[in-house]
Image 1 (tube, protein in one colour):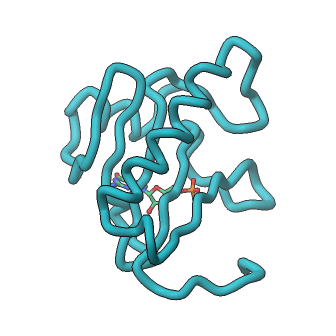
Image 2 (cartoon, protein in one colour):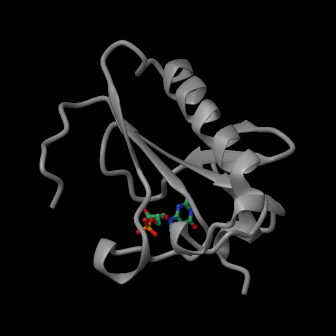
Length: 113
Ligand code: 5GP
């Protein structure tokens, strides 16, 4: 089932897009939890980390490399950042289209809540 992120990919609803290529899209979170809060998503509709398959390994590798590049391009490479992938209910996943949160621009606490 498609989600609001499919609508963002298809430009049916607006988003502040910071990066795009044939495999992925990155845009600023509508409810930022840090000065920099970007969501990086595959264009393929993967539901969550709980449903990834071996055939997704190229996409997943691509996302991690792009997360690093995007974080650096947003000025976080030196200061640091956190990549988060909330998965299913206990982690509070609310949009069931796999996404990597890229969070930075402030000191992040650990452990996460
Ligand atoms: P989750 O809780 O599933 O890990 O994260 C979903 C994220 O998507 C949340 O941080 C939420 O603020 C963000 N989000 C939900 N709807 C929209 C939207 O329409 N536009 C944007 N840019 N972000 C959204």
